[in-house]
Length: 235
Image (cartoon, rainbow, N blue to C red; front, top):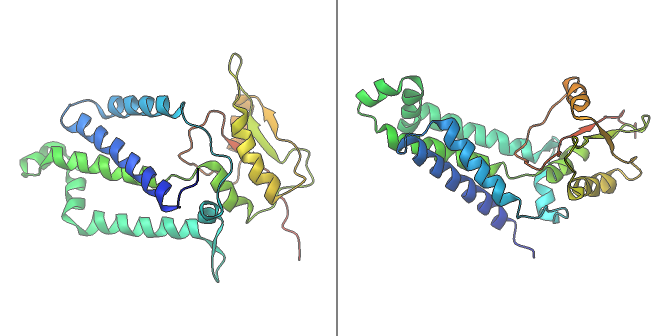
């Protein structure tokens, strides 16, 4: 089933906002420690996620979110989104009463309460705001690969330019995860050798020497991936 692009975007932001609001209520009115509240809702979300299917075939409009380059500078549109969101957040935090309240509560919650700031309501607003931003992160790794691999080439001089973490003893891999990645890799860089799987701590050690690390909101198990960038060919 295919939906217009705005439907999954709004759905992701809405779900993020609902979880943020729920966390805020638990912390502000339920007096739960933030760590316990957010950990609990994370477990709930992951439990629900196990009933969902991994989307491996992305539609062209969705891929365009990550793939499109901002003409004429060839700057990824994703970067434009980040800049816009950063500016909006900066304006809210620096030039609105709501932002001043956030600063006051974060600096000294007791002083903020004495200053007649509605701490509970503002705490809920903080978590709601954070949830909206988390929801806006809705790009999974396959969509992100569309943007990254459109700008770089993989190293053709090494045996395995694509590396993923192997399952630990007693655990198992979900084949759909690698399949969703390989669909993008093989389409953009056909002929890429099979993905190499290495032990968990060996993966961590290799990741330490990475030139660039991109963190996403992806939660699939063993979903981390390392690319060996090649030399850009002269055209």
